[in-house]
Amino acid sequence: MKIFKDRQALQKEILKSKGISFVPTMGGLHEGHISLVKRSKKSRLKTLVTIFINPKQFNKKSDFNSYPRNIKNDIKVLKKLKVNYLYIPSIKDIYGFKPKNKVFIDKVSKKLCGKFRPGHFKGVLNVVNRFLEIIKPKYIYLGKKDYQQLYLIKKHIQKRKIRSKIIECKTIRKKNGIACSTRNSRLNQHQMKIASSIFHYLFKLKKKLKVNFSLFKLNKVKIDLINLGASKIDYIENYNTKNFEKIRKTNKKFNLFIAYYIQNTRLIDNI
Image (cartoon, rainbow, N blue to C red):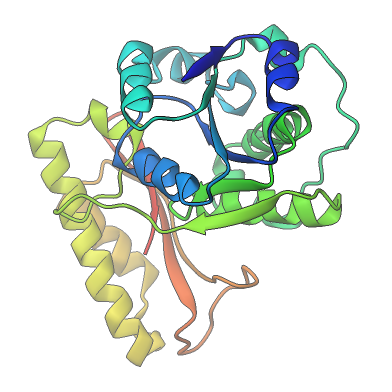
């Protein structure tokens, strides 16, 4: 595995490749990231992983500073997976040039996490746009856990006619149902049980709503989640997964989207 910290050295190297499969991460690698890398390797193109904790997508400096980091372990994991290239840029390396494409931000960015984290998706799309320009990957592998993010990146790529294709990958969950997330490392055993109970509650609720959507009573759901141990709920909403329109009646093509806190840890999921 070749490790690069300079974009020009990386570009010089990957020019030789017939195509790149790209897996963007912020490190703190877990089973979800590993599944993306394994999927990427099936493309038979060279796999490039990035580790970059993007300051522009954090609303609070304290959240950026406390984001879990374990670069030594991440490198060890990626070497074991026989990744071809790892790019660990500095902030200056990523933001020290002007990209050709202007970021396109779809109106969906104002919903869900966009409503509670102003500027978050602008920061995400800014850095993804820069990575796409530096790497010019044939494929980019993204998980469905961050579904709103995936949707907005897809819209940006379509609008700007970028020649990279998004490969959507299923959410990887622990046996207890919790979606794999770097932030899970902040949870103790008791808090993990709370997160598991919340997942199972929402999973059962969705099954019921598929049969009769009128059972969705938002206030009751919020009270139930607080009783299960959630400290605070940013949102619990339902959207059609194809067009991000709210569901008003019984419809099988929807997900329940949630962002909630267990103490100071914010978790998101869609089920």
